Amino acid sequence: MSELQPGKVMRTGQVLAFLLISLAFLWLPAGSKRAPKLPPCPQSCSCTRDTAFCIDSKAVPRNLPTEVISLTMVNAAFTEIKAAAFAHIPLLQFLLLNSNKFTLIGDDAFTGLSHLQYLSLANNNLQTLPRDIFTPLDILSDLDLRGNALICDCKIKWLVDWVERTNATVPATFCSSPVRYQGQKIWDLALKDFDCITTDFVVHQVLPFQSVSAEPFVYSSDLYVALAQPSASSCTILKWDYVERKLRDFDRIPAHSAVYCKPIVAQSQLYVVVAQLFGGSYIYRWDTNVDKFIKIQDMDSRKIRKPNDIEAFQIDGNWYFVIADSSKAGSTSLYRWNQNGFYSHQALHPWHRDTDVEYVENEGKPWLIISSSSQAPVIYQWSRTQKQFVQQGEVAEIMDVQLVKHFKFKKDNYLCLSRYIGDSKVVKWEGQRFTELQTLPSRGSMVMQPFLVSQRQYMVLGSDFSFTHVYLWHEEKQKFVKFQELSVQAPRAFHYVPLEDMDVLLAPSFKSSTLVYRHVVVDLSL
Image 1 (tube, rainbow, N blue to C red):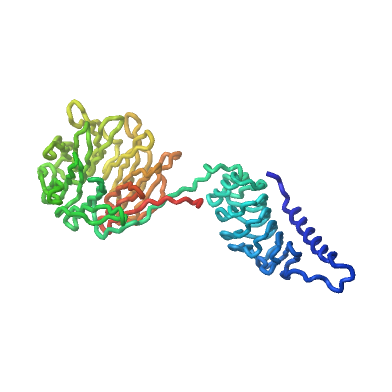
Image 2 (cartoon, rainbow, N blue to C red; image 1 turned 90 degrees about the vertical axis):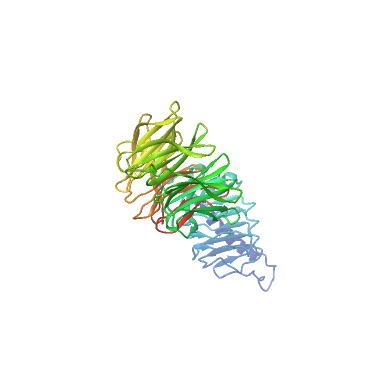
């Protein structure tokens, strides 16, 4: 790329205009009584038939000769070049706009200039340029942007890409900001240096009812969501409408005090475990003959007195589910499925008022991690010889954990521990034990849910007393950083659901409407 000097370009243009105007008078025939009629020209300009030189113009001059191929503007008395500003002089080949005070160039400012070869925007006050502003200039051979305070952010990523592909000569232009790029040649930046993709969670659908749990599931190739609605005395089943791209009513299971509705699809059969605070807990099966849910089993009310959470999983091809019981007299219980239903398999952690249970596969070993209000979370490991879970230890020394959720980022395993009173924690598995990694203020938190969308690891921390906060995992810092606030009143769960053409986040609320958020990807360079 050649180094051009804007000052010399301007002086050359001035001299050229003067000479051309002078030559116009030399064309007069000998003995002529009057000068030839000059082409139209604004007062601020000097013109020949194909050249115009303008000083102190208040706008791009309109009444120029149609044959003008060269326009120079100096010390213009305006700062914005608007769209199609030069479309009325389509034969332009040379456009010199250097040494002005232009701060803004509108979209399509140079539209209609298919003959433009030379464009000088040097020594202005430009900080950015509209995307693809030079793309219509098919035969552009020279472009000068020097002497502008260009900000090297996502808005000029397109410019770096365009310079790599164009045949035009573009002298070195430097970044004025941000600090990390200040003084650096724009053309030396790599496209990968621009981090231009950001995301957002926006409300996609408002479900006009309260709920305390949400469980998505797939049955017969369709997506459903089971919602526990104690205020409506039911487990509500919604079905995803792929045409309208929304959830709609499908069926309801009577449940006077439902706290959890857990769907399980085992060997093509759909079951829903309905956990209630009062009146007992039950298992329903979807009967395809009558197209409705049929109650097939009662749960043992002596063990399941005050259920709080249900987790379902498979071990060695067998289906299990476990119910965390938060009563003083009950116990967290493990059930196993056989051909006729689910049956009690093992009592776990009795009399500890358990609040949550999480199934984790760590280093190829099935684990259950049970949190309670009376002690630190307890780790159980599956024994393949005994076909039962065996207690292994505790997760650090963190008491009063309301909920435990697991996530894996790359090869490392982590736990999110939400606490209603006190700070919530993020802990990391170090091979022998979990160590504390991060502390997050979380007064009134009942839910702390990590989830992965593409390569982005999020975590949602709900609260009964303030906004819900979405965090994003920062790999270099090895911790979550605040990303976004969501207005969800008294959230009780969050569930991420990937769909074919969109990703949604379910947000049940104990006090207000249940919300469905859509995950939106935004390219800031567009």
